[in-house]
Length: 153
Image (cartoon, rainbow, N blue to C red; front, side):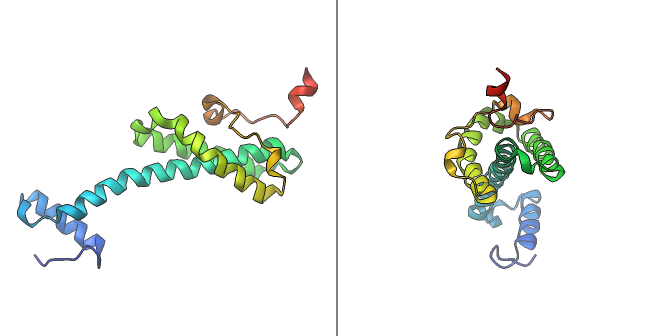
């Protein structure tokens, strides 16, 4: 078996390392890079959850605070992100325990992106996420237009 370098062909390297592990040739295994890759798997899933939550929260904000621009596209994006977030959590149940932390960290980025897309002032949006975890993931939940609750009471 030829020695494939991690830096030049990660696919060949990973196949080689898997075979070395199967063969129990532990003295030939590239342990440092294997450890790095295993750690990066978890980080990758965390990044995916963060990214999807940011997009979902941004669209919920746009839905609520720019109701006159609501579109099927926004509705579809909200639905897709919920499905995909649920998939990430299903594949990585340990992330459920810190879901509220992910929401808390993703929310400011969602606001910044909503400001860019809507051109509304940042002061338009709540400084902290006002959606419950249940609402965020409830496929039937779409926030009311800002001020709608006040008019209804």
